[in-house]
Image (cartoon, rainbow, N blue to C red; front, side):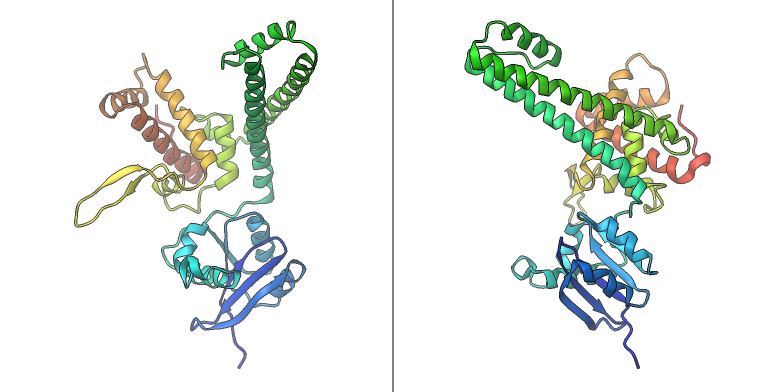
Length: 341
């Protein structure tokens, strides 16, 4: 009687993969600690439809889409949720042990999974990641220019407009190579500024073109084109989450618990999950709180009362968590969702 493999764990890498498959009784039937990249699809295609688990890492969504073509059910998990199932803990870490741990973790009933992205979703996130990179490059370049000028006694303010004006005023008095280097760095800064403006226009265009999802999210206070398009590209219709609270927890916007003996102890937020989405929601929450002054709508009154009662920082996090839950509701319920007024 042929052996049936029902669950497979794959430890992903660039060139060499570890595969661990078990039967219905949980006994290992497929243990391949070194599968080359070109042979992985051939191996998976030879298996009957089964449950495949992988850790969320570079290439995970690509492999998930490829495996699904063969009729497999694919699940992606955060690495920190897999680590407790590794035999030997940190001291027994290797590719084979990771694959076995993934194979065990993917079958757990309470395991949380990462939504599998389509190629279109990843393409939209490419724009956001590139925009992030350009902004980081601009900050690094400005700090480099300010540091170089401070060596010759020129200290510039941090505000961009004042910095830009101060550099051009200082260029006239800089001698020789100092003038040449700062001029070249400023030219590079102008090119990065153009890239940032172009990526911002592209993000706004993506949000405008998505009338069914992104524009629905943009009706919420504190959710702009960048936040809306990034959330849609990350979770799609939100059906991978049971409710809005689960989505908020996935973003790390819930307090960390250290409760025991019936005593509830809550500390700062977990900051788990997607740092980029959490940052966008927090920035949007700051905008909501700043613009709430003088308004009389329920959301603004609630935000101001929360700030008065719990302080600015906690109010911002609470607004961000509330917006995350409403974003999930808007994507999941679609036309049934009513924007609060």
